Length: 324
Image (cartoon, rainbow, N blue to C red; front, side, top):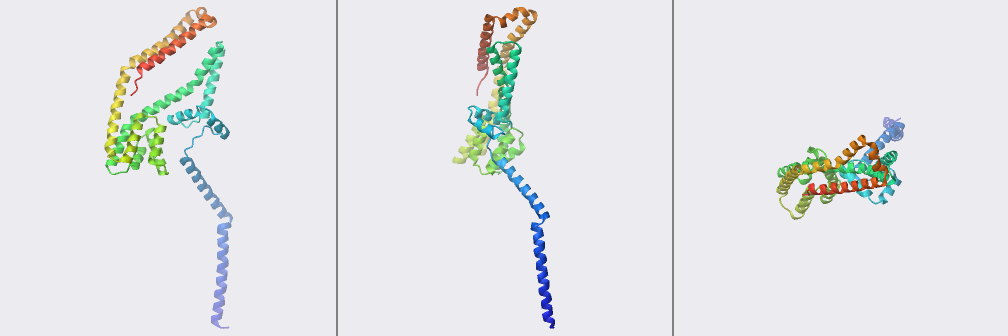
């Protein structure tokens, strides 16, 4: 046999064997159990990243973890305002849980009033007052967070002004404030920066910030930035001026609170004095004070006294509260 023909046959056989081996290796790589395990892990990682991205990008707020309850709460009046209060307070609590806490405290208050054998009208009043306690506490947390935000805002504006004077763009200045400032201002500015990175316009992002933080000083900042982006101008000088104005306003607010401290203390004393005096009189002569709860005339006097105290508190609050 010719040597050339034999060599050709050997090469053909080797090529066929290599082709078969390549097909087998390729099949085991993509269809074998090890390949399936790797692909399953990759799908899990990619799916988790996609779900995390969806959670971080989508800004839809839910009133409850339950879908049906969430739809029901969206139809009820007043739930949107409660959700806005929760958002402005910086809490992750749902409206459903807040309403559940209010209902629980209301029931506890009514049970306590029934144990004290109070009349039906007083029972409803005590239950309503106890149910309002979680909402009042939420309002207090909201006001404290807003106060911290307004205190941090002048420093944030100065930082943005210096960053832009150094050559940084406005979004970069937002990112710098988000990284350097503490909560709540840092997290709110970070939310604006993330929204802008995800494709939201700067105007909409700042508008969402003004909705989340109902501060007049912040609204001045948002309006100034939007006007500057449309008509042009020196934004660094504008931010410096707004920062100085906010500092002067906060200084004036502190002076007003110092001058009105006596009025607020008087309000607290006048509100607590009747309850303290009534408790001491009940401890000294319980039979005499029982007439205020058992006799119809005594209950009327109590209701009138409570109504007059409420009017007095509102009047003092109106006097000592100065809006700026």
